[in-house]
Length: 532
Image: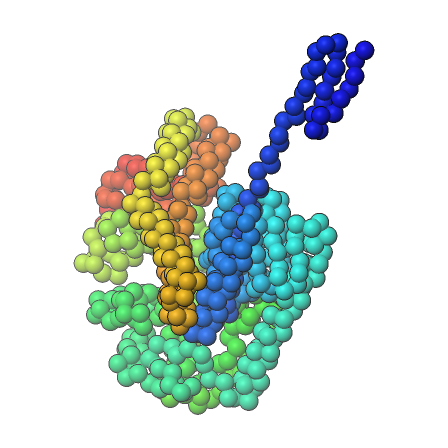
């Protein structure tokens, strides 16, 4: 007869003279390590707020270190910027990228207002993180998105944070509005020719001479492009000390009433809805014209004459050439200037703007529209019937090169060494502080410095890793899709295909042009000889 025995928790079976004992496996459960990151943000770049940033950094480092089953991934921090848009926060975007790479399981943050002040951005980030298994804990509101019902609470709290931001912004806009109405508002930034001193515009004479030259030339019959070319030839620097004057810059100067001593306020305004953006005021908001708001650089009479001349020279939008498929697409391979369209008789052709204004500035020849269109038709046929293997190999080769470059990049290796060295310094400093070998003032000072160096090193590494290669691959795949759905050949120029495939045309010499495709690939074609 069989008997069941229990010896020290083990199963025993008695069968005749033999006894069989089954020893249960000793199941050891390994502790699950949660990879934790923290995100903190300060609103301004002042010294006080920077100390707050360093304090938050230390706070989260200590908190995560206090949990045996937590492993610190990184402390992500942004500083000195507005929190109403997630796009402006470099470290926030770096944290999201690391979450997508599967490097983080949990994110800690002080409050919803620190995480995001925009409901849309907040919920989009939380939903994306939850979809990839990353939870977010908000300390102030005691909300953890790992709990299923937390998203509803998060939406409410994010709305409150957004309302707080809206209230602050609304108060500032109300203040600006009242100061405009009373004539007390001047400007936040001085235009070229002025300096802003104690809230008042003061003439900068060296730049004022340039302003007078611009108005004198324009009233004498010079075009905006000719004036810009003259300033570049004279090597006159702009406000940024670079001689990059353009006809658009000249246009804005000629239309700025500040140079006549007056001010038109609220030319632009910030939209009320999120995400906020600055738009030109076309009558949606009131404007305020203040006479004698600042010292004049030119006479009011000259300003009005220039303004009237601009009005008479303005071409109706219906007669412009901006809708031409080649407009703003052709670039001079010698001087980098855009080509302009010309049609003196029946033949339409394109000429380098620098050559058009001054033949000595650039000797590049002109090219006919027909020559460009014929070259594109030939290029399309080659790509359609022979381009797929080239483009496929390009994608494969790029991905391989990118992978190797990132692994063996000296910049990345050096940054990894620097990050490791700074981390070791921080750990050593903390250990010395715990042993009482470093006083508090020195610890805080050195800890702040290390934290700032760490943040910069990590951001620099992320910038290197986040190259434009992904866009190159994506655009190449899109180009291959457009080619696969296109016709076998085109007898005449197809503007839609051209716009889908070509980014720009570079005129190399009298017999060759290059088509720069949307993915950056540059393909050369021969054209009929160009003329002067």
